[in-house]
Length: 106
Image (cartoon, rainbow, N blue to C red; front, side, top):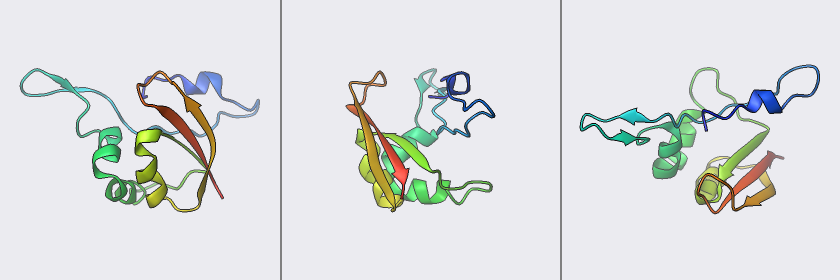
């Protein structure tokens, strides 16, 4: 999530680890409802491979060494990013998904 203080927890003593999150910032609709619809994280789930292809065509984007995704989005991610292996699975996490899955580039 965009609110995670990852830089405060992940470092190697010399520099901060380069981490990026898909945007999941909530926004207000014209009807006064709060939604995450249309955010990067929503588009990953709803558009799948087409979103991932477009995401990595953005200026300055590069494919990461590691990817963390929800188990629900795993098929979209692995079909769009070949060459990644599952190296960890964390069940019963806080974000409401079945598990978070850690992938590493081969």
